[in-house]
Structure formats: structure tokens, C-alpha cells
Length: 153
Image (cartoon, rainbow, N blue to C red; front, side):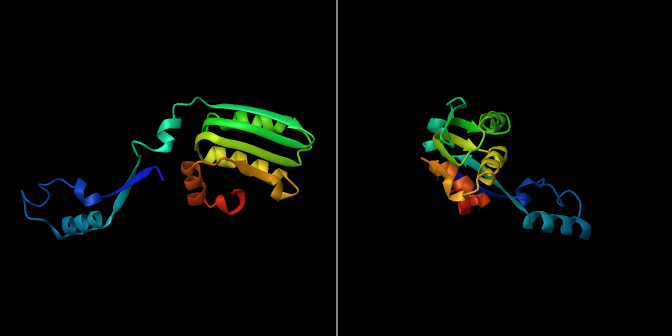
């Protein structure tokens, strides 16, 4: 879904001479075994992914509030820097009964952005009145990994 994952063993980062220049002690062997069992993952965006085409779009949110419905069109990355702008626009609306967010041009959402969506969702008495329109595969994947798909999608 736009990402490539590569598993990298920590043992690959041990010096090649470890235990070669001098006999390996039992402690050294234990350390090496621990490192061989550890790994981390390198996550990169695929070259031709949907996210790559949208990642250069600057953040912008346009919203309107009428008849109890808050509607917003979100573009670009919703992250620690930009999420407060979305929250600020939402907080200006008083008596929100429905929320409709158009996110087809939203390229990424961080935990700060998810927090804002959660605040908006919790503000509704009728949770079924929360709608995300045009969710991209990359944003869906983030929501699936975090569990937000269970109630927002």
C-alpha cells in the first residue's frame, strides 16, 4: 500500500573483527547472540506510490459550518505542526451535529492528526454522523495499523 518494509538484523551492525583479533569471551558470545536475535524495520515509501504524488501538496484546510454540519476539505500532511489548524477551525463551530471531512488530498496523518480526529469524533452525540470522504490507501493503512479504522472508517 505504498510502503516497502525491510527487516534488518542487528547482528549485521556488529564489527566484522568481533572475536577475530582476540579469542571471543563467553560474554562477547552472549552479546553477539543477543544482537543476532534483534532486528529493526526500515520503512520507506515506494517510488510510484499514491503518497509520493501527493506529498508535495502544502497543508491546507478549508471548512464551513452550516445547519449543525461541519465540513472540511483537507490537503497535504496532517501532523504535529498542522493538526492544530484543523482543530482550531473545528472549535470555532458551535453545536456540531455532523462532521464530513474530505481527505482525498490528505497525503499523511500523524498521531497528532489522529488525536484531532478523535476529539472531533468524541464531540458528536451520534457517532454515525462522522464521515471521512475519499480516504487514500496510505491514510487507510495508517488508520488500520492504529486501530482507528474500527470507528472512523
